[in-house]
Amino acid sequence: MMIFSKRAQADLALVLITFIWGSTFSMVKRCLEYISPILFVGLRFWIATVIVLMCLSGELHRISARTIGRGLLLSGLLLGGFVFQTIGLRTINPSYSAFITSLSILLVPIMGFLLFRQQPGKRTITGVLLATLGLFFLLLQTEELKISSGVAFTFACAVMFAFQILFLGRFVSTSNYRQLMIVQLAGTALMSSFIAPVLETPFIIWNSMFVFYLLITGVVATAFALLMQAWAQRYTDANHAALIFSLEPFFAALFAFWLLGHGLTAKEWLGGMLILAGILISELSIQRPD
Image 1 (cartoon, rainbow, N blue to C red):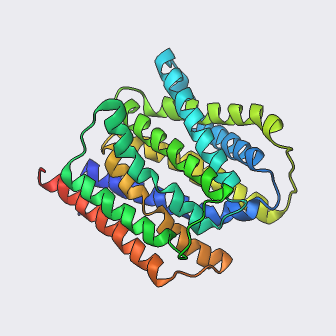
Image 2 (cartoon, one colour):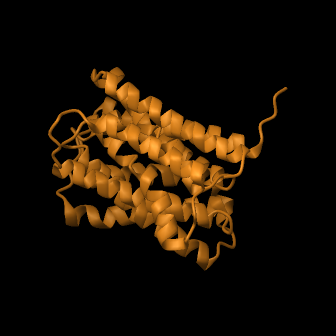
């Protein structure tokens, strides 16, 4: 019987999370035909909060003020990331949204160095550069590069998610990760409920497809995935987690083809392979010191 190390289990968990998140871009795109963006984020996180509380209600016993504060900081970052991403999805296709979101792989080590003086290893830097080159091929569809409002919102999402990955990686080593996730989810749900009527005109049109996709994003892609992410990042560093998350646009492109009929070009396949190469090089840095 093969026994995987905690590091290997964490990597497999992060790949599964990335697959789940990649699958939801097309689902969210379809949902936005029936609901306003911030209201969608709020419902998604309220569903996730209820599910997590049903499973982990006992974890709130003796929760510390520090954990609450950390969870609320993560809530603000998650809220910003998901709101910017969801607004961006109104005007750009799911594959592009996933590709731009994954620019966080470049931002995590940069922010880690600027904020905490975390020096990334040489192979980590090489892996990040390769993955970034892969993202370039995925994004470059025409000779003319234009930055639309959807692209700008989605880049802001990448910044928020990079901060969330970085701070979560620091917090889970000294905080109860289950308590941290409960506060993070509940805080995001509450914050979105407050800002939705201020920043948009909320609307919702109920139908079976919308309800199904809402439950998938709330239960699987939010509650399950964020809990697994918090567990996994106890056994790996933020830079490596960010590299694995760079697979997200590759999975998103596959689901965009399946759900929406968007095909992969040769450049997109090349980009996906470069991203995989970046992750492989990062893995080699675990086996041998830089």
